[in-house]
Amino acid sequence: MKNLLSMEHLSNEEILHILDRARDFENGGKPQLSRSYNIANLFFEPSTRTKTSFEMAERRVGCTVIPFDASFSSAVKGETMYDTVKTLEMIGMDAVVIRAKEDEYYNELLEGINVAVINAGDGAGQHPSQSLLDLYTIQKEFGTFEGLNVTIVGDVSHSRVAKSNATALTRLGANVRFLCPKEWAGEFEAFHSWDEVLEDSDVVMLLRIQHERHSVSKSFSKESYHEQYGLTVERENRMKPDAIIMHPAPVNRDVEITDELVECERSRIFEQVRNGVFARMAIVETILKERP
Image 1 (spheres, rainbow, N blue to C red):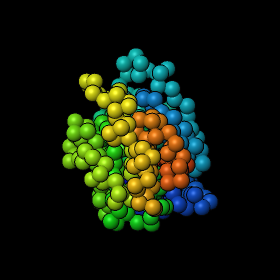
Image 2 (image 1 turned 90 degrees about the horizontal axis):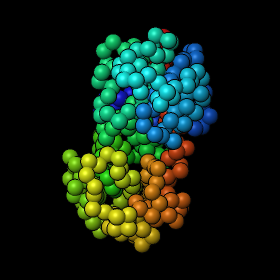
Image 3 (image 1 turned 45 degrees about the vertical axis):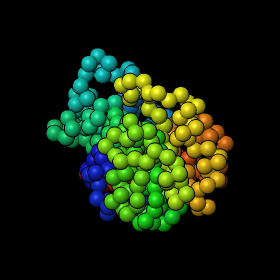
Image 4 (image 1 turned 30 degrees about the horizontal axis):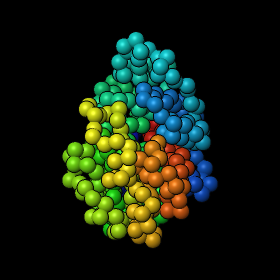
């Protein structure tokens, strides 16, 4: 695995290898890199969890992390993504982790660039590292994906998390359903009422409303969205006893989920953050082991 660009590019075997290695790291396993690799994190969109999680993971596997601040880079002068990455390659980078607002920004890097590229989110396209940490969280909980009912709720059409997880979970044997307003379903068929999906869901995965990606204003106030599509205490009480709640965060409390449920017994929202470090350690190690 030379790059990580999309869950669509990974085989089931590659996915399961990363999950197994994440478990090894959580259980105290040691990195297996032959040297210290140089890596830079290029985030052209805001991030708390993904950026700091990658930085922690990179350091834990023995990488040298080179600071990069997009707001003070030559990108603000109009430098292309290709030229930025090529420059970092010539300076001595072995890998770059990139988040950008453009879908499939990485296509312009596939020829002429010799550093490894890890996609940390491309527009409304894919978010493979988030998907892998979500898969790891689900695997830890249930031991398998086969036959699980996973319901993804919210702003589906604008969500790279929804697309990445739908691809991977379906291939691994889960039954993925979507619950959202009809105008937010995008390419997917979706349910529009909790009553159709709530009581048999093993995983309820909530999504943030991505106002920054909407071309027009939607008709939902925070209160009306929460009433129709938010996870309320009443709805949580109807979930299966062993069902779990997930969210890629940041969480808008009392919009997609009632405040008191964010850290309830069945919530795995902050556990996902913890698992993200182990999953990203596995990703970085797996990719860099391919390099001399």
